[in-house]
Length: 254
Length: 358
Image: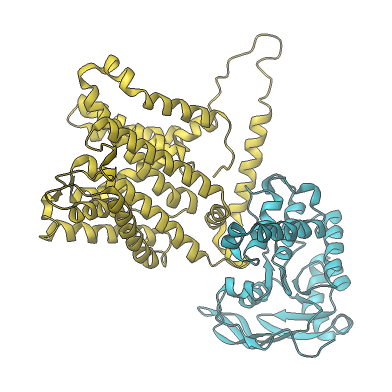
C-alpha cells in the first residue's frame, strides 16, 4: 500500500458564526482503505464530510486530493475529480426509476447530456455503468421501479448505487446504515465490504459493530477536533477514546 | 412533475386542437356576427398559450419563479417593430431569426445575473429587470415613449414571389399561430423528457444533490432560461404582429403576473396545463369584461377559488379527475375502498414528501 495519502487535510477549520464545527483537523486517507469517522452527535463529522465534498467552504486550512489543493472548489468540480458522496438523509429522485437515478449519476461523468445526445455509444456506456452499479448494490430486480415506491432500505442502497455510478475513486458515505433494520443493516454492511476492494471509503457511522467489521482506520472526533486516529485495533484499545466516546456510548446504551 | 400521462391527456388535447382547426366551420354558425372578432381572440389565446408554456419551463420544470417574463415578450415586439422598414413589409425569414437572436442574447445576459440569486431574490431581480426595460421604452424617444411603435405592414412569409402564408389574413394568421404553438408544445414536450429535461427536473427536486453528483447546475439553469426567453420572444413577436404595434404594456410586470397566473391556473410543470390555463384565463377575462365594469374583482375571486379547489390547476383535474362517489348497487358497495389509483397516489406522495424533508 502506498504511503502517500489520497486525501489529506491540514488545519481544516469551519466556523458558523461563533461556533467552530470543525477545528484544525488534520486527516489523512490512504488509498484503498476504509476510514471511519466516529464521534458523538455534534462532533463535526458531517461538517467535515461537507468540507471534503465541497458543499461547504472551509474557514481556514487546506484539503489536498492526490496532492492537488481542492479547498474552495465548488461541489460539482469536486465530484468530477472522483470524490463521490452520499448524504445522511435519503436523497434520491423519487419520480425517476431506480435505473434512471443511476443513469443521471453516471451521465455527467461520461460526457454529460450533450455526449449522450450526440453518440449512441456514449448513451450505451451510461446504461452499462448504471446497470453495473445497480447490480453491485443488488437492485437489478428493481431497475424499473420508481424510487419513491421502494422500501427505505432499498432507497439507501440506491443512494450508494448512485455514488457508484459516478465511478468515484473515493467515496464519502454519511451514515449509510442510518435508520435501517437489523436485516437491512447486515445486507448493506455486506455491500460495503464488497466495495472495500475497489474503492477508498470514508465512512461516518454510528453502528459500532459495522464500523469495527469494516474499517481499517478510525478517526475519533469530539467537539470538532480529532481526538485520536489509528487502526481499528488501536482505537478499540485506546483509553482516551474509551473514556470520551465509547464510555459515553455504552452509557447511552445502558 | 409527471413524466407519463394517462392516455386521456393526448386525447383531450387532440380533440381541442381539432375543435380549433375547424373553428371557421362552427364559429359563424354558433357565434354569428362576432365570429371574426372571436377568431382574433382565439389567436391571442394561442399566442398567450405559447407564452405560458415558455414560462412553465422555468416555473414548473426548473422551479424558478420569474416575475419578469414579459420582458422577452415585449422586447421581441419592439425588435420586430423597430427592425421592420416603415413603408414595406419585412420578411419573416429574417425577422424570426432576428427576434430569436435578440431574445436569446437578452436572456443570456439577464439570466447570467438573476440566476446568481435564489428564491424571493430571484423573483425580485427578474421583476427589477422587467421594470428597467419597461421604463426605458416608456421614456425613450426611439421607442415612441408610452405610445409605442406601430408596425404598418405585417411581415410576409414568401419564397421569391410566392406567398406561403398571407399573414395579413386573420384566418391564415390564426393557422400560422396555431402551427407555432403546436411546434412549441412538441419541442418542449420532447425537451422535458430528454436527458436535459431530467437534469432540470433533478435541479427542481434537489439542486444540492445534483451538484454532489457532479452537475454544474448553473449552466443548465441558464440554458433553460435562454430557451424559455427565446420562446417567450416568439410569442411576443406573434402578439406584436397581431396587434400591429409594440407597446410598453407588453413588457410590464402586469403581463408577467398574468402569464404566471395562467401557468398556475393551468397546472405548473405539465405543459399542457399552462396552455389550457391561457385559454381559461382569457375566456374568463372576456366573459367578466362583458358582465361588469369591475371585472378584475370577479377575476381575482374566481382565480382564488380555482386555486383553492384545484391546487394542481386544470391539469390536475384531467390527470386525477375527482371521482363521484355514488353508492354502487349491491351489498358492500358503499364500503368498498377505492383501489389501485389511490394507492399509487399515496406512494407517489409519500415518496415526494420524504424527499422534501431531506
